[in-house]
Length: 236
Image (tube, rainbow, N blue to C red):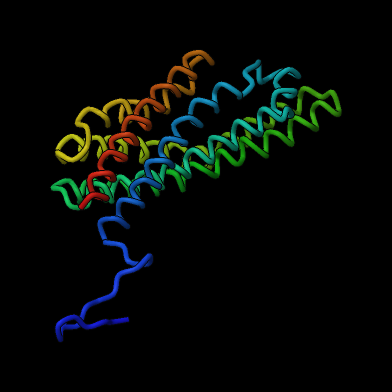
């Protein structure tokens, strides 16, 4: 709707009028919140997940527990939110010299998450079903089927996915470093955490929780830096 003032048309402004910078700022904030929540979930996953001798009936009981399923579901949500967080990071760096690197980081991470999630689904639901049946029949031999779920093409796809995630995190950290827009060091713990994602699977629970904390520090630091960036854009 247009009005006129002194013979010139004037565009009416109302509640629906927002600047492109304000819309971008809102999307960056959503990305920051997603990344922060993902960081917390990356800690909860190893903290809640039961650890035991997975060749015994104790391992079957761990597989069959609600904690097993809940922990792996939290991990799947964390990886999903990670992609949304990196989309927000791309928007935060869109007008910087690191825009192309941020896009590559987002693309590699999306592929990495896509390759990783099916394996977590097998862990969450496949091993849960095996554990329930082994406990019901009191049959330790059934627990060996966990190796079938964890091997083959699914394991290869999982490994490739985690390597892509590590590469995406390293490129994201490099983009943050040279962008001049976000806190320079904020991407370092993030990159280190995902670079160590495969080795940490061979560690004990305390070390895996410590690794989750490292990833969370990276996610939360980047998220805080993104939030500050969104506040600056929102004032333009």
